[in-house]
Amino acid sequence: MIPRIASAFSGPLLELERQFLDCATAIERWFREQWREYAPPFYGSVDLRNAGFKLAPVDMNLFPGGFNNLNPAFLPLCVQAAQAAVERLCGDANRLLLIPENHTRNRFYLRNVARLADILRLTGLEVRIGSLSPGIAAPTTLMLDDGASLTLEPLSRRGNRLGVANFDPCAILLNNDLSAGVPAMLRGLDEQWLIPPLHAGWHMRRKSRHAGVYERVARAFSEAIGIDPWRIVPAFRVCRDVDFQERSGEECLAFQVDVLLDDIRRKYREYGIDDEPYVVVKADAGTYGMGVMTVKDASEVTGLNRRQRNKMAVVKDGLEVGEVIIQEGVRTFEAIDGAAAEPVVYMMDHYVVGGFYRVHTARGSDENLNAPGMEFRSLAFECPCCIPDRMQAPDAAPNLFYAYGVVARLALLAAAIEIEETIPADMDAGAAALAETALAL
Image 1 (cartoon, rainbow, N blue to C red):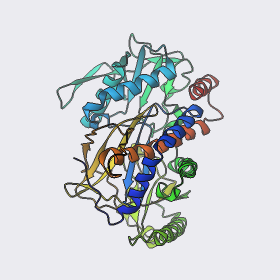
Image 2 (image 1 turned 135 degrees about the vertical axis):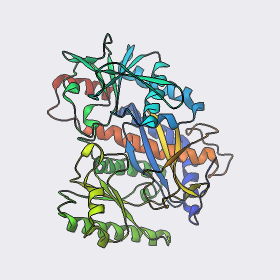
Image 3 (image 1 turned 30 degrees about the vertical axis):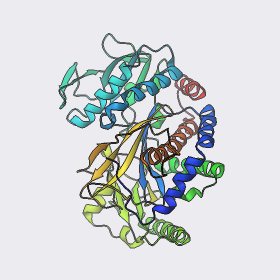
């Protein structure tokens, strides 16, 4: 099913899609030049919001956990992209260790791990799954809802190499976002490819840093094809030293919310948009849609009640929130069966390999859909996101999905630059050399 845009402001977005169509050759050439300079992450996913007058990324995940939600028809595209990524990083690889999150009861996530492992095996790799969970002390086979099984094994460290019993991989792929920090088991692995590098984890990464790099990338792209970058860039602000439990930092929050709302109102007036502007306040690190609130007035972030403070104070793995990003709210005017929906685009290497819609029947178009009760509907692409059709209307499925793919790839490019620019100065020399070599390939 292809959800239709239900917005009175679809005209400007159709103009944006038409601009993408008219400039498709220049766009692909522009991306090709960028990928010669920057190495793409091994994989990633991007949450997009389509407001009818604006199409922008609102989250970039470097440890995507929804491969099971992709349409099976595009498994070959995933395998081809994964093959390109493996050849670029470690051309002679034949063994890969996959390290997932410590979820042993989340069956949806485990199906993601199984699908990812299947993709990697189809590239010609021998794949084993090593768990950081202290509860996995011996090989443990878990039965999945679809009848398949998944075997998790305890990790084994030998000197500067990590593996599992009778398995010494040349590459390690993390599907664990390291929100709780870097376990000692993963430190000092200067003889193996570690993908993504450790500093891409949420213990170090910040959404605001990514947003700043994305803004740079989007401005350069917009200049190249002649569009207003605001059409694809969510404005943002940052507050440091916030403590929701102690109510400290509220003044900073209120001020930054007020300033950003004023900025959005000015652009709305410029484009003749009558919608009420809003912002999204969220933890500057972390995922799973935790630590997120929608705000339409600065007064809403002062004097939060206990429930609101508890919700915002801690995110995944008990990580305490001390920094927040205030991001321009982008409504979604896409719906499936009357429920608010937003596209999520998946990429491997620098290729778009599929996507799905996140749908929530209990949330509105201006709310966070990444919340309990969400559902996923795979995008039944009639063609890949990278192939527009100029013979059809700008909002026809191939062209709408092409627009998704363009903006998602801009976010992926920003992530590539972000990773390169944040290699820690104190990184172990061997690990740093591997990281720099990977980025140069």
